[in-house]
Image 1 (spheres, helix red, strand yellow):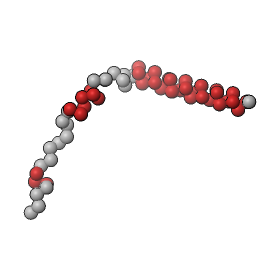
Image 2: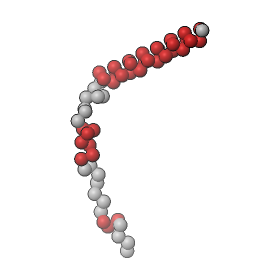
Image 3: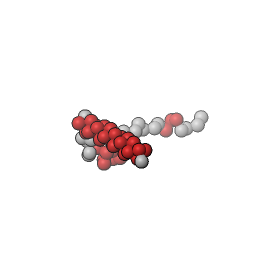
Image 4: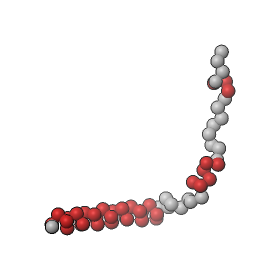
Length: 57
């Protein structure tokens, strides 16, 4: 029975740790940009490949 109390305490401690990490990340502004990920696929940031690399002499 004492193991059960230990596991409950450990899980509560772990949950509080994750909650603190989430609050810190929200306050630091990590979740502020919610528009860019939805349109990132539309941006063309890849460099163009030249056709001279694919030609064989």
